Length: 151
Image 1 (cartoon, one colour):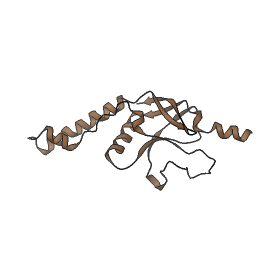
Image 2 (cartoon, helix red, strand yellow):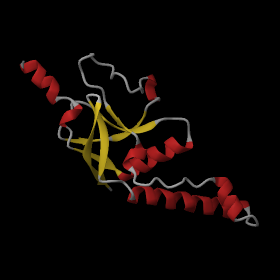
Image 3 (cartoon, helix red, strand yellow):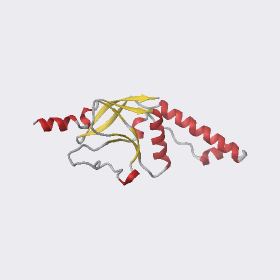
Image 4 (tube, helix red, strand yellow):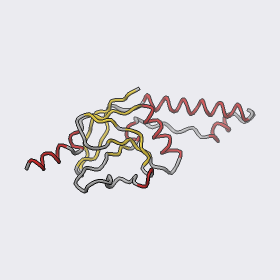
């Protein structure tokens, strides 16, 4: 019975809050929207009441899937949080073609500068919109936990 209690204590059901860096959320969201890669915020076991979730590409190292963690079958898997779930009202990412359409008579350097400004404004909006709660999967169910946005 003691072993079961220890196993339960290490699971994601213990999590009350997740700390994420706003810049990590913006980076993960941009990578997810701009490529075919799946980039998440990941918290790794052992789990506790307050966890830090860090930027992680699921395809990195060949072991990026949601299943397993390379350890024993009894150990809990890492918790993966989609960055879209952390941002309230995800803004549309600025595309190069849209910038070019807005400035049809501008030279290439001006368009590049304007696009870079648009991307930075998008990133700032994402950082400002990191929510205060997120739903995570726990034992086949869904549970809401607090989000502590850093930075």
